[in-house]
Picture (tube, rainbow, N blue to C red):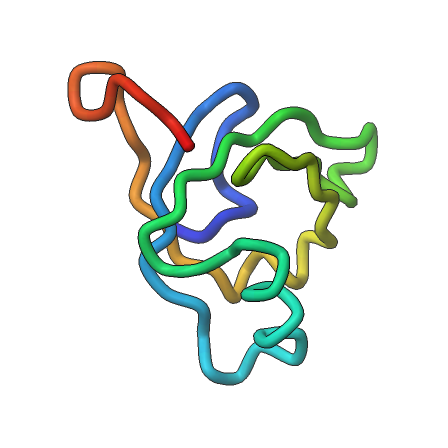
Length: 83
């Protein structure tokens, strides 16, 4: 699934960032790297942008940029702590 599909309050682990992502380097600089855990905090009324908690920071991303990031949802049983 892609990051924009993550439900509010859900956690996921980043798997990949598509090589075609226009902001790939910037996303990586913000902490969106393979293995990082990310939580969807809230979506604007129109669904864009979306706020995420990652590595101690809140980052808002446009939905079109989120579609370049592949994630695996995490469950409480599978991961009891988050970065």
